[in-house]
Amino acid sequence: MAGSIRICLIADNFLEDFAQCVASIRAHTQTPISIFASGKENKDVPTMFPNEKVEWQKNKLGWGHSINHLLANSDEKYVVIMDPSTNFMGDAITPVVKKLDEGFHGVGWRGGLVNVEDEWRSVDDRGEGEVDVLFSYFFAMDREFAIKAGGANPSATYYRNADIEMSLGLRADGGKLWQMDLPLVQERHHGYHDVDAEYREKNSKKNYGRILEKYRGRTDILSARR
Image: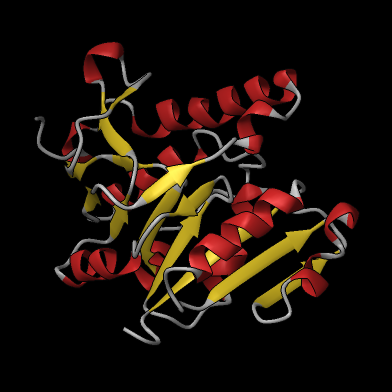
């Protein structure tokens, strides 16, 4: 498995909890980690993690640009995009690599099927199985396939719904996505609960608007209903 997969994290404030996330990973796997931090408030991140691959830049980058930067600056076949609110409780890497090796282009912990009866405005969690979308709490993917499919939308400055857009982009390019139970737990999700509510809702709506414009009605890209 060595050399086949890398865990990619975006540091964005709340560095004590971020350090807890990294420690939980290291307690269960030696999979290489890449940490990308931007903005003045995250300038101390490189010194906090001297044993990991860390990059910091002064100019703040949004979610989409940060994800694409991590994809472009990794060499491994697979990458895991992971939110720092997610913590490892066991080995989440081995089963994911096995599933990716079976031919899936994305494997994740949480996701679901687009609710077509709701005019594509919601996603239903159906548990383990093939899905339309995966969420970026823990989203492993075939790196080159993801890049070929366009990666994350650079217009997505905020994560919420942008991972749905990226998932549907993979599906539209012929990708197969699989949701599975993994030994993970989510702690306080600062990226949702501790941001300005007006900013959160404005950018979430903007991201979902692009989804509806690009994909609503494209039932040909959806997985089988279950």
